[in-house]
Amino acid sequence: WPSLTLMLQTIDGGKTWKGFTASLLGKMTRIRMGPGGKGLALMEFDESFDYPAEVYLMEPGKTQISRVYRDKRHAVTDVALAVDGSIYLAGVQTVGAVRLPLPGKVQILRSNDGKTWLADPADYRATANRVVLASSPDGHMLAATDTGMILRLE
Image 1: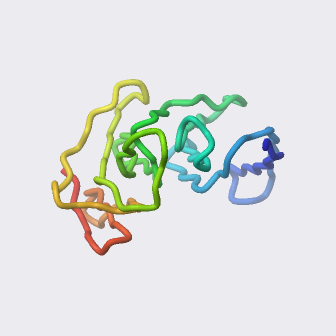
Image 2: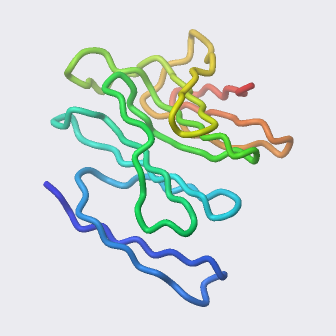
Image 3: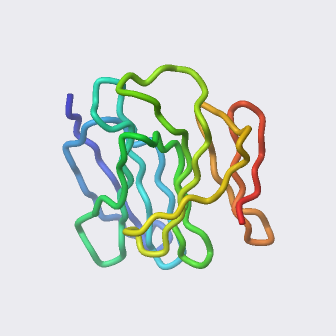
């Protein structure tokens, strides 16, 4: 069922806040902000929904957020913005219409514009239920799986 989601935004270190509300399906499980106020929001859905997840882009000065990704074959579990502005999505491939709680093949996607997505090669042995992204001190993106693998993305 849809639920009312409230989001608050500050761009001046918390002195002033701007509120947004939206009637959303699913759960907002991650918000990642990047330099200049650009941000990503990840919505995850339960098994009864057609898509396992959707990713939305928030841009400074715009009141509307735009959907930049959804695919029935990819259950996105984390999003990240790289220092260069690239968008990274991490998750697992889904197989068939029924999503089972079994580890799937790790899939990492990258985009420079939020429209064209390229698959970053992940180790063929990497499987997981959830994947989390992080940036290393040298600027490389890392992906950690809930099955114990840490992958360095090129």
